[in-house]
Image (cartoon, rainbow, N blue to C red; front, side, top):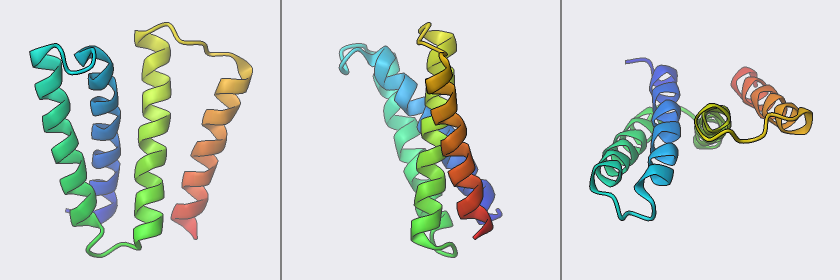
Length: 104
């Protein structure tokens, strides 16, 4: 599998485990806790495998950026978190940073 595809999938799984953390309610609910644990392991495995052939700084930053943007957008829809202009501008800046790192 292409290492960048692995980083993207790992970032999507990072979003999943971050949302799973919320649903686990401090690891007090079994199924959301198990979901979180599985997605964390899969996310880290994909990232670490991709880092065999990608620069660590770029791969890690892209992974974090995808997770942060994905989590922020998902939280807007699932938890009615604010979608004000400043928040959306911050998300856009993170996306711009990811693109810049990938192109560098």
